[in-house]
Each structure stands twice: as structure tokens, then as C-alpha cells.
Image (cartoon, rainbow, N blue to C red; front, top):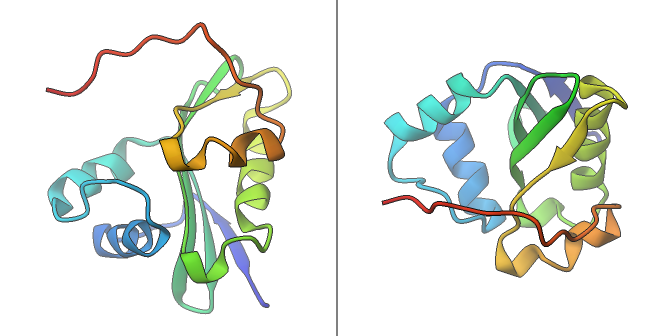
Length: 131
């Protein structure tokens, strides 16, 4: 399996919506202007490619020294369980430095995955949901 990883490479909203759809992650895939803003306003994106096809994405917001919010981790279902998500997380951590914590909100169906890649469950989080 020849997978290439790229940092902050240009991706189209269509490519991202397609990988979201193929991954099973719940994102607004029919709202391409919103996906475009999601991409544009992330300050760290690492993508996984097989040839010219986007097969995975990790999209984050970070200050690179204290905190990094991993907003999206999506891998095409055909490529899941091959270490791609783990590699994307590893590369995000490398970019933000050991001084920065990495946090995320998990989809319910991914709750069992994150402890396997060394995330600790926490109970001190709060949320104001979208309207």
C-alpha cells in the first residue's frame, strides 16, 4: 500500500466531502461552502493520499505550543484499520510539539478507537451545541 502524507496541502471541498462520506464521519457534506470554510480556517491539516485520491484527513486548530484541537479525523472505510489514522495523529503531534496537548470530541461510534491510539478519556469537558 503506497500512501503519501502531506502537510497543509491544498484540497478541494469536494475531495474533503468525499472522504468524509466514505469514512462514515458525520459532517455537512452537502454544504460545500461550509466545508470550504472548515478547510480554510484550520491551521493544520495533514492528508493521506493513494496516488491522486484523498483517502484520509486530520484537520486541526492549534497555537502550536499549548493546545491543539483535532476537529476531524476521517479515513475512507476501505483504508481503515491499516494504521493511517494512527499515522495522521502521530504527524499532528509532531507538528504541534510535545508541549501541546491534543484534544478532540469523539463521535459516539469512535469512542473505542481513541484509547487504542493513546487518548485518555476525560470528564472535564463542556459544550454549547450548534443551533
